[in-house]
Length: 235
Ligand code: ADE
Image 1 (cartoon, helix red, strand yellow):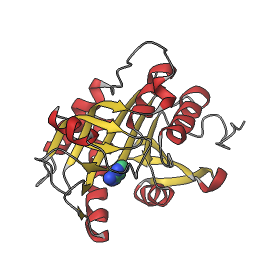
Image 2: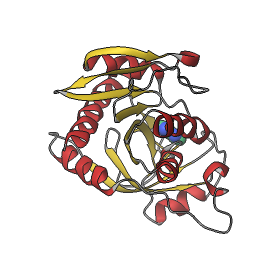
Image 3: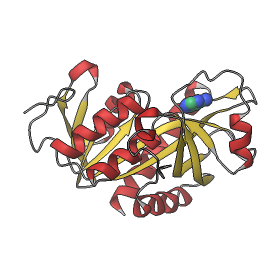
Image 4: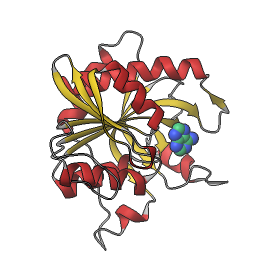
């Protein structure tokens, strides 16, 4: 069996999938799992299934943006029996109280993406995660020494280079924490496919403050986000 974007057999994916944006990060997560095996590699998007502390877990990259994560999440939920997807990614902080390396649990995702906005004409759809996964992730982040975690809304934007705009200022004034490019697509897909989802991001840059993480900081904070995601799935 294969879908247009995944060439795996039925049963190849675990019910729980970790979803980084970057395919290289997926390979790195696979190295942390026990007995991880390659289950798909269409378009260089490698998927692996192994175990973590005895529980089956898979990993598959989402690529960038709402269209890409919506395709992979739909095919996993609809055709491969996946029940829960946790995105582990990065975001640009817009809230004035955020710092580099902070963890953001997206308890809501505003979006400018046409993919989700056009699903139900006339409705301003609320993009929200699984409450159980979000609560477990916040708890797991609190258990990580030296970690500051924020639970709140993010903006899922179709544009990384958005140009001059007051939009982020207005959103920050309304409590929005950060901008990223996938959470709303994942949440809307989980709703349609009756799955559960969560987006868990590390603040990699602070928008308007011209600071970003070094490569070494990215690796350390990524490992921490991975531990938080695995702990949330195991809770
Ligand atoms: N992911 C990480 N930083 C981002 C930014 N500044 N904008 C959108 N997505 C991001």
